[in-house]
Image (cartoon, rainbow, N blue to C red; front, side, top):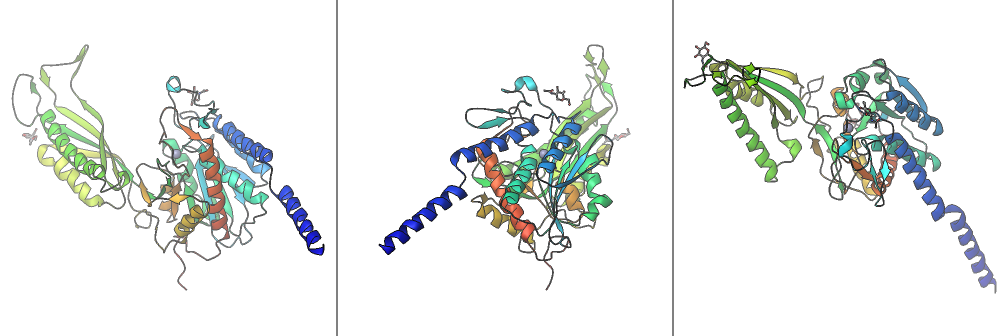
Length: 449
Ligand SMILES: *[C@@H]1O[C@H](CO)[C@@H](O)[C@H](O)[C@H]1NC(C)=O
Ligand SMILES: *[C@@H]1O[C@H](CO)[C@@H](O)[C@H](O)[C@H]1NC(C)=O
Ligand SMILES: [Zn+2]
């Protein structure tokens, strides 16, 4: 009899605990709906270049900060281009902080080519949310905030300070946004130890993380030669000399692309070269003069070089093969980003045991039941380079698995379930990062004991 009543009591306690601790299905659904609705609100703000509505985006972020009791301030390095900085104070402010970065602007869209308008944030029956910025990268900005919302609800207290920066202008180079921020006194005062920034979706189940990115070199080569009659065959015309160069650029491009096609290298690991323009010919009212060989011809190339490549050998190739003075050719760079940071080290974030932040990320993703692929080189540019340029470790990471890569494309979307899963992943990462108490040097490596 005694045993029986004890058992009954135990059962009662168990039932009560289950009833009060587990949110009911209806509550969970309600919470999910609220999360998706906040994401949609952010997506509906038209922050499209070339005239993003930054004021409305800043208001929205400030509203979120208030609802989460986070400190916030607006920095304006350039008038009309607000950067909203949020802070979740840590219990040990002497430790280097964590910076979670995201950009608020998006690229333009060809609205009529979309199935659902790009600022409608339409949620279809399969759970896909269509919007410009759903992948790049309003998802990440709000996932940071939702993860913090959950951690706060669970009573988690960070030891390191956690900052969130919502920066303008990434899509037009970040010069008035992340670049000025990273170089500012305000930034220095944050004593940042690690930066998280954007990555890319993955077609399979593995999340992708990026430890560096390729640097853009925008090259213009120019040929000059004697003009002549369109009927005459003679050597060293500007067009002939330029065509010889284009031939060797094409050969180099193919050799790099073949490495990717053969699976020997990833897209980010090779040097890419693509022709951006060709400029030659003598204009006439109906088009071009056809019986004249022009005395000048130019071509422009978008080159992307990984920090793991040898920039000097590429420069030699340009000077000797692509624009040789012996063929009366010249070249200029419209842009030529260095593969080195301001202290002369390659712009790479370590992915071995020397960088505790990398291991913490790997473990945290695993803990959230996610999988992380091999570290990669981001094929294009992101704001992360401005932080790496300061000698800081920066990891590019957007938790989107099983998702087609639609950044800058028509019908950009993110599935609701993937978005929610990403919040759990950030919850795990932020918890691990903000609880990490070992001192780390500003370059992310561990202190020698
Ligand atoms: C969004 O803003 C851009 C200007 O940056 C404008 O061209 C576009 O029409 C706007 N889209 C909508 C749906 O209002
Ligand atoms: C270079 O230009 C000079 C002067 O116009 C010309 O005489 C010479 O043939 C050109 N050489 C080549 C290789 O184009
Ligand atoms: Zn982006």
